[in-house]
Amino acid sequence: MLEICNLRKSYGGKTVLDGLSMTVQTGEIYGFLGENGAGKTTTMNIVTGLLAKDSGSITVDGKPEGDMETLSIGYLPESPEFFEYMTCREYFRYIAAACQYTGNIEKRTEEVIGLIGLTPSIDRKIKGFSRGMKQRVGIGCALYSGKDLILLDEPTSALDPQGRADVMEIIQRLKEMGKTVILSTHILSDVERVADRVGILHQGKLQLEGSIQELLRANASHVIGFEADGLTPALREEIAALPFAEKVEGKDSSCYVTIAGDWEAGSRGLFRFLADSGLTVHRYEESRPTLEQIYLKVVKTHAATQSWG
Amino acid sequence: MLQLKAGVKKELLEISRTYRLIALILVFIGFGVLDPVIIRGVVFLLDLMNEVPELNMSQVQGLGLLGQSAGMSAFVGDCINTCLLVAFLLLMRTAGGEQKKRNCIIPITLGFDRECYIYAKFLVYPPLMMVLSAAGFYTAYGVSVILFPDDRIPFVNTLLPVLALMLFIAFQVSMLLGFGCATGKAGIWVAVLYGTTTLLNMALGMLGKNQYNPYALITHATRFEEVNAADYGVSAGIAVAVCFVMAVGAATLFKRKKLV
Image (cartoon, rainbow over all chains, first blue to last red; front, side, top):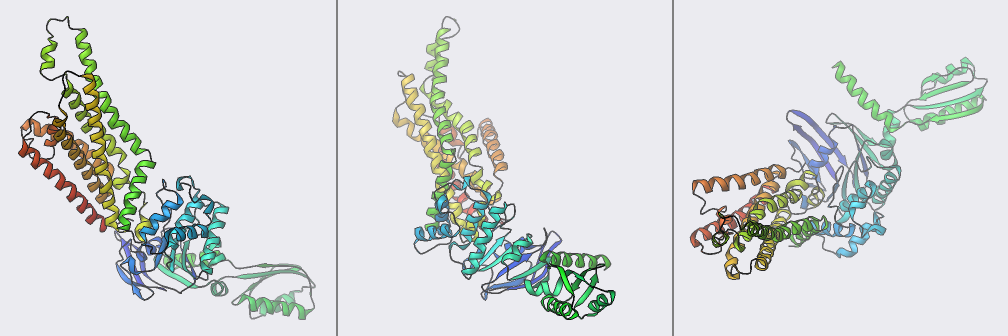
């Protein structure tokens, strides 16, 4: 759906994008991660044609970027601003003109407003809307013309928990509708909830890309803790010698095993070992790896590489 | 065409829903009522002081200094100074302010034609300001007809002055829209244009060169007797041409303008 190749952009000598390459498949939700100033918004602005690139190429459905009308992109910018003196219905009529919607405008307007859950406020002025409601209006705009690729730049930032939950529900619905969504955010729990794949942008380059499961398996530590009677030092050494055990910690009857690599296979192996050893397990806990751990690891690794280099 | 209509509707909603239209009506009509009343008040005060031997009221009124034309001229002066400044301040948002607030990002990324976005402003604001200035002018005319029944300017003699006023106001508003939209810095242009109007008009007057340019329309707006047809025609023509150049220039520059 979207292919970015070797994209470069500098502002007054400061390199923001330093050869960014990424691919987003049709129908997936792509979590586009990175700290403030990493270049996420710059990338989105270039893809939507608001900003000129220095070099590199972008193709959407095989079409080159440049003329917005030829591309199929809906865009929700960070902190969107609206003509707030308009009612929700009036604003969407204006949006219909913007995207030169050729179908029944009234029907489509009501359909989109229904989809974003603002039907009860359809004839209210946007001025009186909460931030969450405004974000929903912005998402409605991005999907009004039925475009397949939707770029959402920080759609949940500065929203209260309810507002965030509402927006995430709409994104989930977009996925069900088969839309391709690029979700730029630094709220990692949101990405974990909905994204199929993620890319971590750091200092203008994509440092890591893949499905969440793949990244969790490959990059994060998965710790299993348990308490068992009869846990001897010898048994502890046997656990440490297991091929999937990266680290074994704890004392007396408690033990914490850090699983290396495929944590599902590792945890199955550990349970089998415990069962074969005849130990009685009293307590069991599992520390699942998070995207945040991966993210921080990528950022720290890069910072360390830079300081050493 | 659909986008131009939507753009015009958006501008009309903006000016009416944000109470800017009410404010503008109040200012233009307010001065239309107030200026002749103030002139009548001055006449009344002078009448009270009629015993002062140096003052000869009949001479003062005979010079047309305190009659209906004085009331009308006072309105034209206030219209070009105060009303225009108020209008400039109220139009700052549309002439670049909304670009700064990034309100136009969503429609433009969805395909709203940038030229339509600019042309819609030129289709709404200069004509609207022309109507408002004419309304204020004829309010002043109506009030002064009541207040100065013996010193009446024939209605037909007001047609060219009001047109001159309307064209000058449209010229000024177009300049603000043009420069403001093209640069996104409406505040600076309000100061520049307002300052220029006052200073340039004064300088041209002092040099005796206030002819054949849009600023000469200010003088034509207060001339109810004879008209220098050539000066009027050229000045009006230049003002109209500038309005068109501003619209096309702003649309062309806005098309290439960085919005983020």
